[in-house]
Length: 292
Ligand code: C5P
Image (cartoon, rainbow, N blue to C red):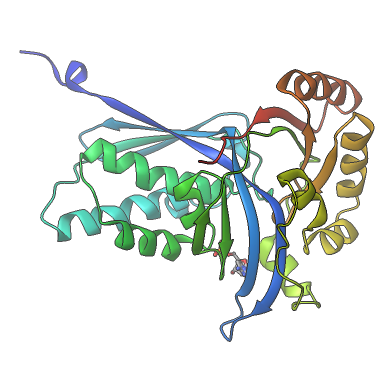
């Protein structure tokens, strides 16, 4: 008879970083949420979750930024995702047995690249595989939205345009991009940025021309405010430009900026150069998934 340890099995799921190539604020709903028009892609680099069979539920953390995850461990969005999915699985007569979840936190916290939302979405994807269940797509999308406005996009984790508060999703055929992600390791509060935003009725995305022209022609409407509140954003964006990025922009509510490079090798060379300039900041060369 195999003992309990040898019967354990593990499923892993990547949680790619979400990059807002452009983010336009086009209005505000009566409940305070902002209407957005976003061109979004996802990177190979990200957090990683693993799910291991267990006698009772557990949650462990690892990775460079694990120590920065504040708050009660029980309040982590991953565990809220687990609980919501389990409820849905049990309601449809399925099994959702005990699981130990390990979160490898490679992405900086509160940094505009979706970390917590990506982790929650990866939990929804990974736990379906782990439990060998399928929740209908519309129900899954509703669960995701309940967890956060960015979670439905992160569930897709492929190039897309998102509208509404992030839940109206259209896949797009963006090419693979080579990026350096750069963050001065200053946390930025998304609610605080939205609260301080005064201009909420900006023009929607204009996606004429080729993709690089389209990205360049658009904006992140949260960037000017984030730059004024966190001056390091302007500094780090300047460093990316100095290292040869063809285009530099902030993602989400910041502070992460991305630079677009012509190749992965060029992005990796820039990452090395940036590490030497500011060893205390976060720089990561990566590539995005191409759209279909
Ligand atoms: O949905 P989520 O919890 O990720 O959003 C965090 C906060 O960001 C919200 O409480 C809200 O203040 C702000 N937000 C917004 N409009 C959006 C998305 C987020 O105002 N479309």
